Length: 368
Image (cartoon, rainbow, N blue to C red; front, side, top):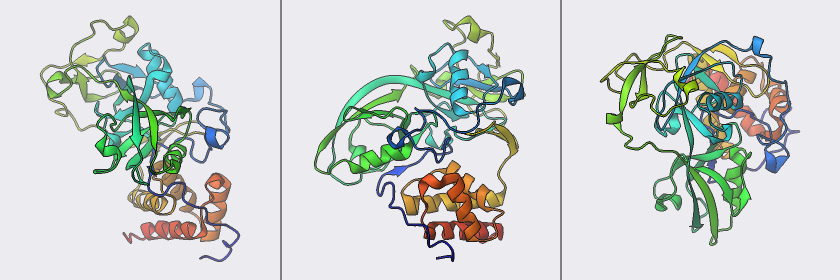
């Protein structure tokens, strides 16, 4: 244990067998949710959104994942504003947008939109579909769920462990939003709060999950997709649902790009190859940054592993924030002070801070 860290107490894991993971999300890191006195559903602390004139003038192309024309959106600085822009473009209530994936219309949890969007990424918005209520008998301590959140108040299932309690329930699927547990609303909760509630449910008892699944397209499959070319920002080779604009609002038709015919998904130029990314922040304006360096990618991966080992959560955006805080620190004590100041709500244990310092140092010298 490093000298000077003895004042810090080791916190128990938020969860032990249930993971909580916002993929590349984690917007609002370190801000407690409704169960802890704030969060996505309550007042937000920090800087107010910048005025429109100061926001990045970047245009991104988007579609509804179940099928729609191509829309163009711009002028957002955080994930909530992004969902609002998508909803405005397609004339939907903002609350209908569950989560977004990058460069694929499928419910692919490895492609979740989180804190960063590549400047060449195409955004697919998954909206609410069928609602369902499922009774689950908790026969084991671990249910086999990995929970993520969208950074705007919705928690949903990222992964289901094969052979687990949940894996045997066909009605529960990856991508389902968890609306309530035993009648307690979870709207506005962070991923780790939902995971903790699931962990604390007593073994040997039945509980009720209220879920909403993403809307699915009719006849969805490779044959129903063509390659599109979108105008206005150099985007091309996108996967686009076939079927044209019939029945779509005029406001959406005004934003439709030009389609090519007969192509296969992914047959155009490589997706997501832009060298820059738009980084969305919970405090302050969005910024355009270079893609993470090899050192940063290695360090983030290792710190994310440490988060899972010590705290039972996975959160790449939190890991990225910790690497950013620690890469110029001279010793573990300086890192501990920076973490306490920025992420004090997590109460990271001393051993964890020391291992994070070591992981960042190893990455700097290529020791992975």
